[in-house]
Image 1 (tube, rainbow, N blue to C red):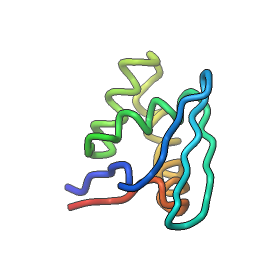
Image 2 (image 1 turned 120 degrees about the horizontal axis):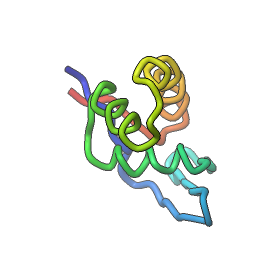
Image 3 (image 1 turned 90 degrees about the vertical axis):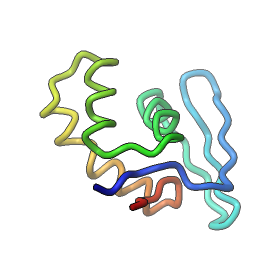
Length: 88
């Protein structure tokens, strides 16, 4: 099963409850809210989508189905921005 992880060569800095990600290869800056920063930090270690959802369920006490419904599109957006990548 494929896993998703943070791309290498990013600069990440916490600013209060947010995180700023700089991708020098693509000359882009991405600002993550508190939940996005939590996801980013969790994906420093490769996880399957199911593993990530389970972690978020435990952290936020939100139903699995709710997080599962929202997470796919969010991960795809971060992959498109060069923040995350799929690995085999």
